[in-house]
Amino acid sequence: MPEKTSTLVFLPRNEKRESETGDSILATAIKAGINLGQHCGGNGRCGKCRIRVVSGRCSEAGEREKSVLHETDLDSGTRLACQTFPL
Image (cartoon, rainbow, N blue to C red):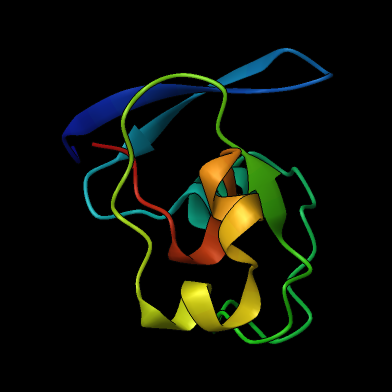
């Protein structure tokens, strides 16, 4: 059985899901049947899977995310679900 790392809460539906080690937030959403949009197949290019992290710890934004999102978005907690991993 995969190790569980974090409990994710998808708002506004308040759906709680356990993320597995190494899964992005997008991967956890897909497994839960939650559509966040992934027009580029989760490659971090389209920006359609934008989310807002309101609490908890996540991986740092990488170059791909920084090329899609504005710095002000990143500063306010906006991330790409396909590029963001719970810690």
